[in-house]
Structures are given as structure tokens and as C-alpha cells.
Length: 339
Ligand code: TYM
Image (cartoon, rainbow, N blue to C red; front, side, top):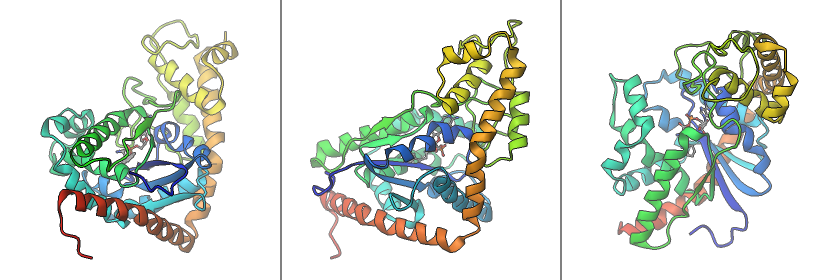
């Protein structure tokens, strides 16, 4: 079980630096992290090992990993109150992943929708890492005895398999792992593409107009929202109806996530104004809201020594708890301790 001296519950999450941070990652995940700092002991990391499941350009990966760290801080994660680290700096992630691979069933992995989607997108590189990815994600979570994992809806299946792996392990060896709960935000958990609103907004999308990046220039953000696909109906009326009006409903979700306005309030606000005015308003709201994050991120990126300090300290703090859990796991399964 988690450290008995531990008073606060533990929250943990990560994002792959496999592309630029998107509005989806922000609204589905990061935006909800800073508010929980007082209530939980929080661990947030750059999931760089996960990105290797798809070919990366090494220099780009390094750059994006640091940019992501700067963006975490710019989004409000105070490094004094949150443990911020790079996954590959804590080798226990890969070590526990190996053990958990041996407690994860082929059939379970075969049911993962992300594996199916990514296999289609990368059909020239369907590697074993892509398949066993959920065991590494389970290791990320279980090493820290996390109580709560705040993620967007697309990661729910991975948190569920993590719960199954933890329960299976515990049923054999006793109470070793905390079984974590996902936290999926009520609004913004599934931000859709602006050009194909039936698809998730994704950093790997080849259609650059469908995806808005957190650190994008305000004029580009506004342009993308102006061009956003609304709906083919002739109603020209802002109304929340995800099935019939996927485009407008997605924009309403985004607007609501930034303004805290309810869908009914948004419908009233744009009554009689039509899609054009609505799209422009959403674009402006998003651009204005994320501009300070962009500026702060760029400011932080100019201070490499500061960032280095944060990720070194973060890895040290993370290693302390990760090492303790791994040691216990090794002992339970029968490996001879070196010390
Ligand atoms: P990743 O890097 O694909 O996405 C990062 C986070 O952003 C959320 N997200 C979205 N939310 C709403 N709408 C969208 N369009 C959208 N796109 C992305 C994701 O749900 C996620 O919360 N496997 C994870 C990274 C990971 C992880 C972990 C997360 C590795 N280990 C341990 C939690 C705990 C992933 O690929 O997320």
C-alpha cells in the first residue's frame, strides 16, 4: 500500500511529448491539474518513453519534452507544490513495466482501441511497444500508488486496464498496489477536430486546420476557429445537439470550458446571431485565454538552467516513491534483493 506516513491522496498524470500540446490535452487534462494541488500530492510527467512507440526525430523530441515542462508550469503547476519530471529519468517506470507485462493478458491488450487506431495510422511500424504500451502506463500510475488519474476520455480504457492489472497482482501477492480511479472532466473530456468534428482533436492529425495548439499564435487560432466546420443544416442556430450538430456542439464545449457558461447560457447569448459570430467569439476567447500561457512558456524556455533544476529535483522526488514500490514488487515476485 501507499506510504503509511502519507496523509494526502496522490494524483498523477502524464502527456506524451510526441507532438505539440493541443487544445484537447489542455481542456481534457492539464487545465484541471493545478486546482487539485492543495488536496493531493501531485506527480506530473513528460511521457517520453511512450513516444518511442512511434518514430520520433530525436532533436524534436528533446525540444518538445522541455517545451512541455515549461508549458506545465505556465499552465499553473507550481514546481514547488507539484512533482514535475521526465519519465525516462526514473528508470523504475521501465523496470516495473516489464514485471507488469507478465501480468497483462494478450487478449486484454488486443482490445485496446488506441492500439487499433495507432496500428492503422502507423501500419509500417506496428511494434511490440505499441501493443504493450498499457503495461508501461500502468507502471507509471502504480509506482506512485496514485489514487486519482486525471485524463481525457480517450485514456479511460488505459486506466481501466491499469486497475485490472493492479487487482490481479494484488489478488496473488496481497495489498501491493493502490487501485486508481480515473478523473474525467465533465466538460472538455473529448475535444473534437475543428474540420472533422466526428474525430478526436489529435496532435498526430495530418490536417493542421483541425487541431489547435496551446502555444499557437492568436491570429492562427482565430483563423482556425473562423474556418471550423459547423453543420450542414440550414438552421444557422447555436444549439447543443452532439449527434445532429457535432461541429457546433464541439465549439460550444470549448467555449463552455473556457468561460464556465452553461450550454443554455451560450444558446441564449448567440440567439439570432448565427454561426459566423459564434465561431469568431469562440476563436477570440480561446486565443485570449491561452496567450498568457504561450508568453510564459516562451519566457521559461529562455532559462534552461531553471528548467534543468526543476526536472532534476522532480526526478529525485519521484524516484524516492518509485524505488520503494519497485523494491516491494521485486520482493513479492521472488527476485533476490541486491542490498
Ligand atoms: P496523450 O499524450 O495522448 O494525451 C494527453 C492527455 O490529454 C488528453 N487528451 C484529450 N482530452 C480531450 N480531448 C482531446 N481531443 C484530447 N486529446 C488528448 C488525454 O486523454 C490525456 O489525458 N497514454 C497517455 C499518456 C500517459 C499517461 C500515463 C496518462 C502515459 N502514462 C499515466 C496518465 C497516467 C497519452 O498518450 O496521452
